Amino acid sequence: MTETDLYPLRIIPEFVERIWGTHDVSYLFQHPIAAQPIGEVWLTGDQCRIANGPLQGHTLEELSRAYGAALIGSAAAASCPARFPLLMKVLFPRQKLSVQVHPDDIRARAVGQPCGKTECWYILDAESNAQIALGFNPGTTRPQIERSMQEHNMERLLNWIDVRAGEVFYVDAGTVHAIGPGSIILETQQNSDITYRLYDYGRPRELHIEQGLAAMKTATHAGRVVPRGDTLIASPCFTVERDEFTGPRTMRSTGAAHCLFALNGAARIETPGAQPLTFACGEMVVIPASLGDYSIIPQWTIELLTASVPSIITAEPETELYFALPAASHSEGR
Image 1 (tube, rainbow, N blue to C red):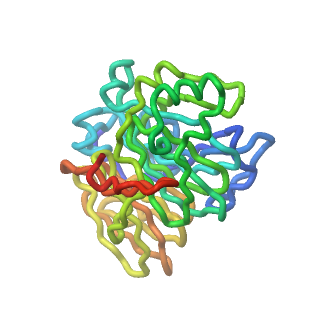
Image 2 (cartoon, rainbow, N blue to C red):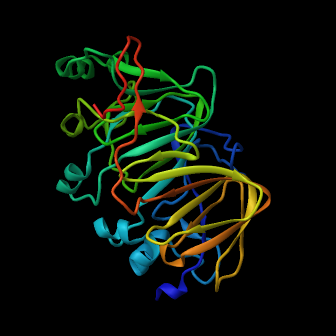
Protein backbone atom coordinates (compact mmCIF):
# COMPACT_ATOMS: atom_id res chain seq x y z
CA MET A 1 0.00 0.00 0.00
CA THR A 2 1.25 3.47 -0.88
CA GLU A 3 -0.08 6.93 -0.05
CA THR A 4 -1.28 7.29 -3.67
CA ASP A 5 -3.95 4.71 -2.78
CA LEU A 6 -5.58 7.13 -0.38
CA TYR A 7 -8.70 9.20 -1.03
CA PRO A 8 -11.55 10.71 1.05
CA LEU A 9 -12.85 7.92 3.30
CA ARG A 10 -16.48 7.74 4.37
CA ILE A 11 -16.66 6.01 7.75
CA ILE A 12 -19.39 3.60 8.88
CA PRO A 13 -20.33 4.56 12.46
CA GLU A 14 -20.35 2.04 15.29
CA PHE A 15 -23.43 2.06 17.52
CA VAL A 16 -22.42 1.15 21.08
CA GLU A 17 -24.90 -0.10 23.67
CA ARG A 18 -24.78 1.57 27.09
CA ILE A 19 -27.15 1.15 30.04
CA TRP A 20 -27.50 4.95 30.28
CA GLY A 21 -28.36 5.40 26.59
CA THR A 22 -31.44 5.96 24.45
CA HIS A 23 -33.75 4.13 22.07
CA ASP A 24 -33.95 7.14 19.75
CA VAL A 25 -30.88 8.43 17.86
CA SER A 26 -32.90 10.09 15.08
CA TYR A 27 -31.46 13.51 15.92
CA LEU A 28 -28.57 12.57 13.59
CA PHE A 29 -28.88 8.93 12.54
CA GLN A 30 -31.33 6.57 10.90
CA HIS A 31 -30.52 3.37 12.76
CA PRO A 32 -32.82 0.63 14.09
CA ILE A 33 -32.32 -0.01 17.80
CA ALA A 34 -32.86 -3.42 19.37
CA ALA A 35 -33.70 -4.08 23.01
CA GLN A 36 -30.60 -2.44 24.48
CA PRO A 37 -30.24 1.35 24.43
CA ILE A 38 -27.54 3.11 22.41
CA GLY A 39 -25.31 5.38 24.46
CA GLU A 40 -22.52 6.23 22.05
CA VAL A 41 -22.11 6.40 18.29
CA TRP A 42 -18.41 6.09 17.46
CA LEU A 43 -17.54 8.05 14.32
CA THR A 44 -13.79 7.40 14.09
CA GLY A 45 -13.30 4.35 16.26
CA ASP A 46 -10.48 1.90 15.53
CA GLN A 47 -12.98 -0.72 14.38
CA CYS A 48 -15.09 1.63 12.26
CA ARG A 49 -14.97 0.47 8.63
CA ILE A 50 -14.57 2.30 5.35
CA ALA A 51 -17.75 2.53 3.27
CA ASN A 52 -16.42 3.59 -0.14
CA GLY A 53 -13.78 2.91 -2.78
CA PRO A 54 -11.02 0.28 -3.05
CA LEU A 55 -10.37 0.31 0.71
CA GLN A 56 -14.01 -0.47 1.52
CA GLY A 57 -14.35 -2.89 4.44
CA HIS A 58 -10.99 -2.09 6.02
CA THR A 59 -11.00 -0.65 9.54
CA LEU A 60 -9.57 2.72 10.44
CA GLU A 61 -7.09 0.92 12.68
CA GLU A 62 -5.85 -1.24 9.79
CA LEU A 63 -5.38 1.77 7.52
CA SER A 64 -3.60 3.79 10.22
CA ARG A 65 -1.10 0.95 10.62
CA ALA A 66 -0.67 0.51 6.88
CA TYR A 67 -0.32 4.17 5.88
CA GLY A 68 0.99 5.89 9.01
CA ALA A 69 1.71 9.59 8.53
CA ALA A 70 0.23 9.61 5.00
CA LEU A 71 -3.16 9.03 6.60
CA ILE A 72 -2.92 10.47 10.10
CA GLY A 73 -0.42 13.28 9.52
CA SER A 74 3.11 14.03 10.69
CA ALA A 75 2.09 15.66 13.97
CA ALA A 76 0.05 12.65 15.09
CA ALA A 77 2.63 10.17 13.79
CA ALA A 78 5.37 11.80 15.86
CA SER A 79 3.74 10.58 19.09
CA CYS A 80 1.95 7.44 17.90
CA PRO A 81 2.85 6.51 14.31
CA ALA A 82 0.29 3.77 13.64
CA ARG A 83 -2.86 4.85 15.44
CA PHE A 84 -5.62 7.17 14.31
CA PRO A 85 -5.24 10.11 16.72
CA LEU A 86 -8.82 11.30 17.34
CA LEU A 87 -11.84 9.39 18.54
CA MET A 88 -15.09 11.25 17.86
CA LYS A 89 -18.42 10.13 19.31
CA VAL A 90 -21.98 11.31 19.70
CA LEU A 91 -23.35 10.69 23.20
CA PHE A 92 -27.05 10.19 23.99
CA PRO A 93 -27.27 10.12 27.82
CA ARG A 94 -30.70 9.45 29.31
CA GLN A 95 -29.31 8.62 32.76
CA LYS A 96 -26.32 9.97 34.67
CA LEU A 97 -23.01 8.61 33.46
CA SER A 98 -20.56 7.36 36.06
CA VAL A 99 -18.16 9.79 37.73
CA GLN A 100 -14.87 9.30 35.91
CA VAL A 101 -11.34 10.51 35.50
CA HIS A 102 -8.84 9.82 32.71
CA PRO A 103 -5.04 9.72 33.06
CA ASP A 104 -2.71 12.05 31.18
CA ASP A 105 -0.18 10.81 28.62
CA ILE A 106 2.53 10.10 31.18
CA ARG A 107 0.34 7.98 33.46
CA ALA A 108 -1.31 6.20 30.52
CA ARG A 109 2.00 5.20 28.98
CA ALA A 110 3.20 3.95 32.35
CA VAL A 111 0.45 1.30 32.20
CA GLY A 112 1.10 0.40 28.56
CA GLN A 113 -1.48 2.62 26.85
CA PRO A 114 -0.52 4.74 23.81
CA CYS A 115 -1.84 8.02 25.24
CA GLY A 116 -4.00 9.60 27.88
CA LYS A 117 -7.46 10.98 27.34
CA THR A 118 -8.18 14.68 27.05
CA GLU A 119 -11.56 15.44 25.53
CA CYS A 120 -14.05 18.19 24.69
CA TRP A 121 -17.84 18.23 24.55
CA TYR A 122 -19.84 20.20 22.00
CA ILE A 123 -23.44 20.43 23.22
CA LEU A 124 -25.61 19.74 20.16
CA ASP A 125 -28.93 19.78 22.01
CA ALA A 126 -29.98 20.14 25.63
CA GLU A 127 -33.14 19.99 27.67
CA SER A 128 -33.77 22.75 30.19
CA ASN A 129 -32.42 20.71 33.13
CA ALA A 130 -29.39 19.15 31.38
CA GLN A 131 -26.15 19.28 33.37
CA ILE A 132 -22.54 18.14 33.38
CA ALA A 133 -20.14 17.94 36.31
CA LEU A 134 -16.58 19.28 36.15
CA GLY A 135 -14.44 18.93 39.25
CA PHE A 136 -15.64 19.50 42.80
CA ASN A 137 -17.35 22.26 44.73
CA PRO A 138 -14.98 24.93 46.10
CA GLY A 139 -13.27 23.90 49.32
CA THR A 140 -13.68 20.16 48.78
CA THR A 141 -10.72 18.26 50.24
CA ARG A 142 -9.19 14.97 49.19
CA PRO A 143 -10.20 13.27 52.49
CA GLN A 144 -13.79 14.36 51.83
CA ILE A 145 -13.61 12.87 48.33
CA GLU A 146 -12.26 9.56 49.62
CA ARG A 147 -14.87 9.43 52.39
CA SER A 148 -17.70 10.16 49.93
CA MET A 149 -16.66 7.11 47.89
CA GLN A 150 -16.96 4.91 50.96
CA GLU A 151 -20.27 6.48 51.97
CA HIS A 152 -21.67 6.37 48.40
CA ASN A 153 -22.56 10.08 48.24
CA MET A 154 -19.83 11.49 46.02
CA GLU A 155 -22.43 13.06 43.75
CA ARG A 156 -23.10 15.88 46.23
CA LEU A 157 -19.46 17.06 46.08
CA LEU A 158 -19.41 17.52 42.32
CA ASN A 159 -19.60 20.89 40.60
CA TRP A 160 -22.75 20.51 38.47
CA ILE A 161 -23.13 23.00 35.59
CA ASP A 162 -26.20 23.77 33.48
CA VAL A 163 -25.51 23.38 29.76
CA ARG A 164 -27.04 24.89 26.62
CA ALA A 165 -26.89 23.95 22.95
CA GLY A 166 -23.87 25.46 21.22
CA GLU A 167 -21.57 25.47 24.25
CA VAL A 168 -18.20 23.68 24.26
CA PHE A 169 -16.56 22.26 27.38
CA TYR A 170 -12.92 21.26 27.70
CA VAL A 171 -12.15 18.26 29.91
CA ASP A 172 -8.41 17.75 30.10
CA ALA A 173 -6.90 14.60 31.54
CA GLY A 174 -7.01 14.48 35.32
CA THR A 175 -10.39 16.27 35.59
CA VAL A 176 -13.04 14.39 37.57
CA HIS A 177 -16.23 14.66 35.52
CA ALA A 178 -19.69 13.28 34.83
CA ILE A 179 -22.54 13.84 32.38
CA GLY A 180 -26.18 14.05 33.40
CA PRO A 181 -29.21 13.13 31.29
CA GLY A 182 -30.98 15.33 28.78
CA SER A 183 -28.36 16.41 26.27
CA ILE A 184 -26.83 15.24 23.00
CA ILE A 185 -23.07 15.72 22.94
CA LEU A 186 -20.45 15.49 20.21
CA GLU A 187 -17.24 14.40 21.91
CA THR A 188 -13.76 14.79 20.43
CA GLN A 189 -10.95 13.11 22.34
CA GLN A 190 -7.53 11.57 22.17
CA ASN A 191 -7.98 8.05 20.82
CA SER A 192 -7.95 6.27 24.14
CA ASP A 193 -10.73 4.52 26.02
CA ILE A 194 -8.83 4.34 29.32
CA THR A 195 -11.36 5.28 31.98
CA TYR A 196 -11.20 5.09 35.75
CA ARG A 197 -14.69 4.93 37.25
CA LEU A 198 -14.84 6.51 40.70
CA TYR A 199 -18.56 6.41 41.47
CA ASP A 200 -21.57 4.87 39.71
CA TYR A 201 -24.69 5.73 41.75
CA GLY A 202 -24.89 2.21 43.13
CA ARG A 203 -24.91 0.45 39.76
CA PRO A 204 -23.11 -2.93 39.87
CA ARG A 205 -20.13 -2.00 37.70
CA GLU A 206 -16.43 -2.14 38.50
CA LEU A 207 -14.87 0.89 40.15
CA HIS A 208 -11.22 1.92 39.85
CA ILE A 209 -10.69 3.86 43.05
CA GLU A 210 -6.91 3.51 43.48
CA GLN A 211 -6.09 4.25 39.82
CA GLY A 212 -8.60 7.09 39.68
CA LEU A 213 -7.31 8.85 42.78
CA ALA A 214 -3.77 8.61 41.40
CA ALA A 215 -4.85 10.10 38.05
CA MET A 216 -7.00 12.87 39.58
CA LYS A 217 -5.61 16.41 39.51
CA THR A 218 -6.61 19.18 41.90
CA ALA A 219 -6.18 21.92 39.25
CA THR A 220 -6.92 21.50 35.54
CA HIS A 221 -7.85 23.67 32.56
CA ALA A 222 -11.39 22.28 32.37
CA GLY A 223 -14.37 24.54 31.80
CA ARG A 224 -16.60 26.21 29.25
CA VAL A 225 -14.50 27.29 26.28
CA VAL A 226 -14.55 31.00 25.54
CA PRO A 227 -15.93 31.36 21.97
CA ARG A 228 -13.51 32.29 19.18
CA GLY A 229 -15.55 32.67 15.97
CA ASP A 230 -15.82 29.46 13.92
CA THR A 231 -13.18 27.76 16.07
CA LEU A 232 -15.01 25.85 18.78
CA ILE A 233 -11.77 24.87 20.49
CA ALA A 234 -8.02 24.93 19.85
CA SER A 235 -5.96 22.85 22.27
CA PRO A 236 -2.70 20.84 22.34
CA CYS A 237 -4.55 17.62 21.39
CA PHE A 238 -7.15 18.77 18.85
CA THR A 239 -8.72 21.66 17.02
CA VAL A 240 -12.45 21.63 16.27
CA GLU A 241 -14.15 24.13 13.97
CA ARG A 242 -17.77 24.58 12.98
CA ASP A 243 -18.89 26.30 9.79
CA GLU A 244 -22.04 26.61 7.71
CA PHE A 245 -21.79 27.61 4.07
CA THR A 246 -23.62 27.49 0.76
CA GLY A 247 -20.80 27.99 -1.75
CA PRO A 248 -17.70 25.93 -2.61
CA ARG A 249 -14.77 25.88 -0.17
CA THR A 250 -11.19 24.76 -0.73
CA MET A 251 -9.41 23.26 2.26
CA ARG A 252 -5.98 21.73 2.86
CA SER A 253 -5.18 18.61 4.89
CA THR A 254 -1.36 18.75 4.66
CA GLY A 255 0.19 17.77 7.99
CA ALA A 256 -2.96 16.36 9.58
CA ALA A 257 -5.95 14.22 8.72
CA HIS A 258 -9.25 16.11 8.69
CA CYS A 259 -12.36 14.56 10.25
CA LEU A 260 -15.43 16.07 8.59
CA PHE A 261 -18.78 15.49 10.26
CA ALA A 262 -21.99 16.78 8.70
CA LEU A 263 -24.32 18.21 11.34
CA ASN A 264 -26.87 19.28 8.74
CA GLY A 265 -27.29 19.39 4.97
CA ALA A 266 -25.13 17.62 2.39
CA ALA A 267 -22.06 18.25 0.24
CA ARG A 268 -19.75 16.75 -2.35
CA ILE A 269 -16.01 16.38 -1.76
CA GLU A 270 -13.67 16.63 -4.75
CA THR A 271 -9.94 16.03 -4.77
CA PRO A 272 -7.54 15.43 -7.69
CA GLY A 273 -7.31 11.80 -8.77
CA ALA A 274 -10.26 10.53 -6.73
CA GLN A 275 -13.94 9.94 -7.36
CA PRO A 276 -16.21 12.66 -5.96
CA LEU A 277 -17.78 11.67 -2.65
CA THR A 278 -21.15 12.84 -1.39
CA PHE A 279 -21.95 12.86 2.32
CA ALA A 280 -24.87 14.13 4.36
CA CYS A 281 -26.15 14.78 7.88
CA GLY A 282 -24.83 12.23 10.39
CA GLU A 283 -21.97 11.02 8.17
CA MET A 284 -18.23 11.21 8.83
CA VAL A 285 -15.52 11.57 6.18
CA VAL A 286 -11.78 11.34 6.92
CA ILE A 287 -9.51 13.30 4.59
CA PRO A 288 -6.02 11.71 4.65
CA ALA A 289 -3.20 14.11 5.50
CA SER A 290 -1.36 13.39 2.23
CA LEU A 291 -4.20 14.58 -0.01
CA GLY A 292 -3.50 18.28 0.42
CA ASP A 293 -6.08 20.49 -1.27
CA TYR A 294 -9.69 19.33 -1.51
CA SER A 295 -12.96 21.08 -2.31
CA ILE A 296 -16.32 20.93 -0.54
CA ILE A 297 -19.31 21.78 -2.73
CA PRO A 298 -22.54 22.06 -0.70
CA GLN A 299 -25.77 20.68 -2.07
CA TRP A 300 -27.67 23.84 -1.11
CA THR A 301 -26.04 24.12 2.33
CA ILE A 302 -23.81 22.20 4.74
CA GLU A 303 -23.23 22.62 8.47
CA LEU A 304 -19.83 21.07 8.98
CA LEU A 305 -17.66 20.18 11.95
CA THR A 306 -13.95 19.75 11.19
CA ALA A 307 -11.56 18.18 13.71
CA SER A 308 -7.80 17.67 13.38
CA VAL A 309 -4.58 17.41 15.34
CA PRO A 310 -2.73 20.75 15.46
CA SER A 311 0.38 20.82 13.26
CA ILE A 312 2.02 23.42 15.55
CA ILE A 313 2.37 23.65 19.31
CA THR A 314 -0.94 24.95 20.66
CA ALA A 315 -1.68 26.38 24.09
CA GLU A 316 -4.45 25.24 26.39
CA PRO A 317 -7.79 26.88 25.53
CA GLU A 318 -9.20 29.79 27.47
CA THR A 319 -12.00 28.47 29.66
CA GLU A 320 -14.43 29.59 32.33
CA LEU A 321 -15.54 27.35 35.16
CA TYR A 322 -18.71 28.24 37.04
CA PHE A 323 -19.51 27.23 40.60
CA ALA A 324 -22.49 27.67 42.88
CA LEU A 325 -20.29 30.17 44.73
CA PRO A 326 -18.28 32.91 42.93
CA ALA A 327 -15.06 31.61 41.43
CA ALA A 328 -12.29 33.02 39.28
CA SER A 329 -11.99 32.34 35.56
CA HIS A 330 -9.70 29.53 34.48
CA SER A 331 -8.36 31.60 31.58
CA GLU A 332 -4.94 31.51 33.24
CA GLY A 333 -5.01 27.71 33.30
CA ARG A 334 -5.28 27.27 37.05
